[in-house]
Amino acid sequence: MAANHDGNAARHQEWYDMDIEEVNLEIRHLLENYSKVPPTEVVKHVNKIRADGFAANPYPCIGHYRFLNLTLLTHPLYDSILMRLKSNPNSIYLDLGCCFGQDLRQLVYDGVPSSQLTGLDIEGPLMSLGYQLFLDQETLDSRFLVANIFKGESQGEPWTGLLATGADIIHCSAFFHLFPLQEQIEAAKIIGKLVRKNGMIVGRQSGSVKPAEVPAIKPGSTSFRHDVSTLAEMWNKVGEETGTKWKVEGSLDQVGIKSKTTSAVEDENSRRLLFTITREE
Ligand SMILES: C[S@@+](CC[C@H](N)C(=O)[O-])C[C@H]1O[C@@H](n2cnc3c(N)ncnc32)[C@H](O)[C@@H]1O
Image 1 (cartoon, rainbow, N blue to C red):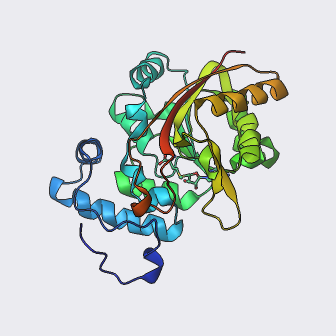
Image 2 (cartoon, helix red, strand yellow):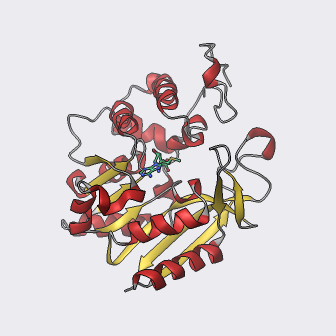
């Protein structure tokens, strides 16, 4: 791997990887064919956007280049999600905590009309960087909304507009794991209201074979890492408290998990948790 050359001390945090020399095949394909980035420019382009994004918001998912992982593409339901969105022009996809919006772009590349897709994040600058990463500000007809998930409808628009339409598919990746369990429950109750009947929340997050609160990035706070059964317990509780019913499916694997020695946020119990949470009532 190449070294960082800019000498900016703020970049050398524990979750800021060295600049990369190659990207994964899927994101290269998307950047070359959707964004029309020349093949020889892809790596340089990605490193520049990563540096700008980290300067704006130093999340591990940016420092570790996780925005290059098209996670939705690896979800077992990707093809059926694609078909559901393509076959019904009234179906709505919402990406909560979308950051750069890479999964949304993959759906557009795979043929979903971009007007059916909405991204939402608390950080407007990250969504703006998404346009710079994918070079599609002039062509993409998706909406990108700035809102705080925890404030829900109390913040008025744009949340109340989302609430009015609801969504069939909510992608919510690397979001819940940022927070302690009690806050995850609060977020789930708010997000759950956006899901249409038979709609689903899908995504990935940091999980664990030993579910527990672990120290979070923010000093003094924790985040809860689930396995499938604790995730199901959480959504049972959400259902009981909101008069809804949810089916939780998921799996733990080691895709993209870094070793303890190369990551400040993962340990030997860490796993990737892929999940599907379907609203039954
Ligand atoms: C760890 S990143 C994950 C980004 C993306 N979903 C992915 O999988 O690559 C978490 C994202 O959630 C956003 N976020 C954090 N708190 C939020 C909140 N309260 N409301 C909306 N977005 C939030 C952050 O700005 C960030 O873009």
